[in-house]
Length: 560
Ligand code: 16G
Ligand code: MG
Image 1 (cartoon, rainbow, N blue to C red):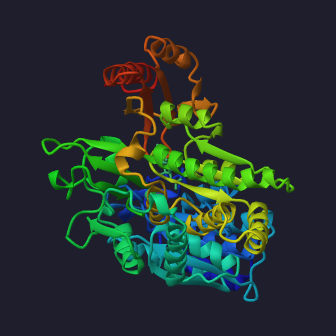
Image 2 (cartoon, protein in one colour):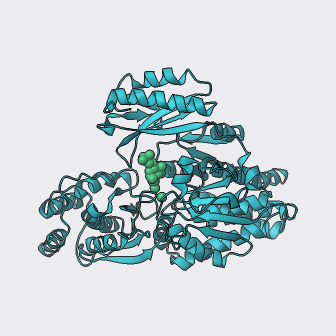
Image 3 (cartoon, rainbow, N blue to C red):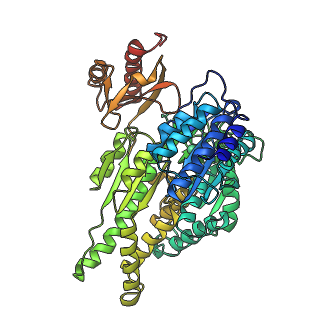
């Protein structure tokens, strides 16, 4: 690092001093904390993003959001050149610089890291970082901090993309690096064009079956509602009403949004008796999660939740159906078959009933720890990999190989059997690959795919929900002195440390029919999470409570 670069860094870093007594960790999806203590971390992540751009010689993304957390929190996460999450190899460096005590310490860490990673500095080394933020009031000032971080690396440019959903920013990064069009309008165009193709390909016989084409969406009073209002202007044949768009003065994530609806299983604010039976959906604060629901009764706030597992099941069913249409005709013609590897990725939070349903469909189901980066990586091993967390974050990944094959297939079919069922199946798969975000889970594109598939099947939300019946479950959390004391294995289903705890969980679980329970340290909060599932709600509640007691005895403050 030359003297000039060093001087700029020292000078700008001293404008963003680290708050005393705060230790930050990059966690499952970036740094998150009370917004007022974040500017130094965000400034430093700006530097990291510029370094990542120099290292990869690609465009990098930096998103200011705290997703479903309360409005006074904020956060920052980095998108890698593929549009996916920052490589895990750089997370320790993120932790180190966020916690560097002062400007000198920071510059020393950067110098050492750059040497280790072979990153060259200088005016002829260009770096580009796209910046986005959600609608939080603290976002503007934090975006400025990020900008100054990026700009303090000589030759680096920060481009402010404004208020965006997280998946939009990830999509833009991916598109730029692939040399494709990458503006917000391009994003909207890609969504509504591919949605339109799918609608045009709906079989005649199901076209008129759907009971109600009205959809009501809870926008969590965040960026997703705002963007959906824009997108819906372009969509034909889909009646969307957005509630909680943020414009009516509601508070972000306050008793609204996908996280609230999925965890509490009650109607969000702004929804009530008038929605009984109507298809409703809920987005989270940065619109990378989506769940559906319908209101059950005029008398209370109970809902029938259609969560990420059921969205996954719907997607899997549709993709499998299209693949089998494609393959069936192929066998008849005895053409060279292409065995398509279709895989499904879940976490331990997936409802046990969904896993059984998917396996009975003949699908390969694999498990990873919680967190998009793990699921995404695993799904990328397949020709078509579908991943979802129960909380509604997920997408469908198509491998480059498969897409090349599909493109060739499409041209072949267009010339030899235009209009055949086989050709339609190929066209549908190709439209899905364009509609569904290839960078990260995206509530807006996921919502359009759900809507297209329901129309294709001629299904109401009730029919969809009946695919299988969820096992009753309960999630609780325990405050502990040190959550890192819990170490798990087997995709978080088995506790390795502290020794003896897993045996106690097993003994409790064995008492219940269809019992299943696991614990894991949260990646975003200072707690241990407890999950339990059993054949009745009462049993699931009791199992969860008894596991909480064991966790508390081992690690807690004895308050539970
Ligand atoms: C983050 C993750 C989400 C995960 C959740 C778990 C991303 C983009 N988001 O929101 O995938 O389910 O954390 O939170 O990776 P927890 O560790 O506090 O339970
Ligand atoms: Mg989110």
